Amino acid sequence: MAKIVNREEMAQGTIIMQVGDVYFALIGPLGAPTHIENFGKVVCVGGGTGIAVLHPIARALKQAGNEVTTILGARSYDLLIMEDKMRAASDHFHICTDDGSHGHHGFVTDVLKDVLEKDNMDLAVAIGPIPMMKFCSLITKEKNVKTFVSLNPIMVDGTGMCGCCRVSVGGDTKFACVDGPEFDGHKVDFDELAKRLASYLDEERTSLETFEKCKAQ
Ligand code: FES
Image 1 (cartoon, rainbow, N blue to C red):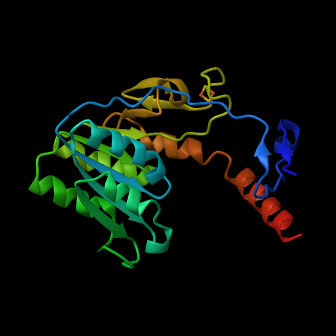
Image 2 (cartoon, rainbow, N blue to C red; image 1 turned 30 degrees about the vertical axis):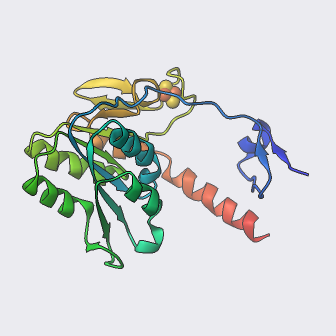
């Protein structure tokens, strides 16, 4: 019979879920919806698990009539997710791997520079690790291409009350959970965000070790 994992068990942090187990509760969607319209030519850049977030956005942009160029990156080809789905949502498609196991040997930023040299883009969407979003935004800023990024600060309540997810955007404090998660990439203080995300690294390491130990038992 399926086990229902409740909030108290989750709080202990040692739950290992099995296939068929279910969460007691989930809330969502939270935050502001993505603004979709026919911008014209859009370049979508995705890295790591950010690709899962990028997929419905790229698909909606294509359905709205945009010409979508997609650039996906991963450390290695075996870590790349949703290739087929992203390909189906794109008019032009590029893969980059850090180790050269597939596609361009290098970073998404190399291909982004290339795409922007060859074509005039009306919008860029970059979703992935913070350094990737930061450097994509720097590149698109040089070309004056409006860019939005999806931010993933640490969140607690997800409803705008705890302040944990605050980010600086154009000098203003925003809460990613209610004001975002998407913001103008040219205005985000990525260095501050990276610092805040590293606040609980020791605790995260301890949690991972505990998880590994439980899994081994
Ligand atoms: S997660 Fe608490 S305010 Fe956003």
